[in-house]
Image 1: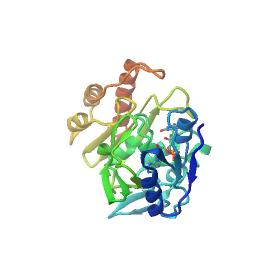
Image 2 (image 1 turned 30 degrees about the horizontal axis):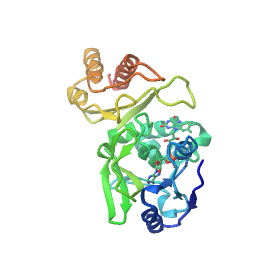
Image 3 (image 1 turned 180 degrees about the vertical axis):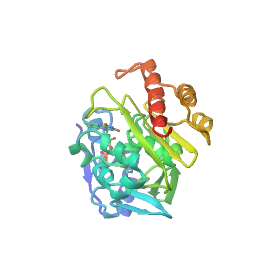
Image 4 (image 1 turned 60 degrees about the vertical axis):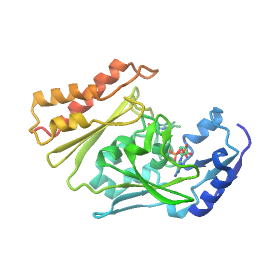
Length: 278
Ligand SMILES: Cc1cc2nc3c(=O)[nH]c(=O)nc-3n(C[C@H](O)[C@H](O)[C@H](O)COP(=O)(O)OP(=O)(O)OC[C@H]3O[C@@H](n4cnc5c(N)ncnc54)[C@H](O)[C@@H]3O)c2cc1C
């Protein structure tokens, strides 16, 4: 690994100022579970690493009915999985956070890092997609909010301007939303998703998002429209599972074939909907 300057500012303002000094030769580091591997493998060789973990303003998980859930950018996945508000109002997000890596990894890894890393298989993405979460960012020109489905633009590409930092993730309060996170992986523990997804229901509407089936996580808008306000029968569920396959574009890779991912996507949709069928 190439030598680099390590900076650990204690305020967002100082972090942005260091970032502006080094521009694209600096990287932000939170839990470091992705970035250090990329540095070790020489995929990136930054001159400066800006560790944001000493910035107190980036910690905390808050909830109110009017503002919803605010997850600080440095809150860890274990903190999210164990948070009472997350478990009560967004149980599928708690399940997704708990499914990432190992307990030790989740003591360091952040949800913000999982999203900025923009892997198509990021486990915390699909719960945030179904809730319409918003990414809060701050840079030299001030603060911005970006809907998550506009934030992740491609594999490892996000809508962050130069020297902008993610400060938090805001998840709207959706009264009565219920749902489940699904992860299909080769091993039961400490493995990346072959396909993942969240199926949720709020009132008579269904919200479905899948991961690892396209360059970005995908919200299945056509399938949701098919189901909207309708009674879930076995034939409607089968139709929805089939339609879901037309909304994704999985690839063959080391983890699975395109066909397996199509079949598992249909399975997730079917299992997710069956829990709501009476
Ligand atoms: C053994 C192992 C198992 C894993 N298993 C899983 C798994 O099951 N599921 C899964 O989804 N992932 C998994 N991962 C990937 C990884 O742990 C997650 O993506 C993690 O959530 C990243 O968070 P972090 O805080 O460690 O990010 P970091 O490594 O610190 O950063 C990741 C990226 O985000 C950027 N970044 C981080 N925070 C900010 C911020 N606030 N503002 C701007 N940019 C920022 C960094 O510059 C970097 O590009 C695994 C990794 C390992 C090593």
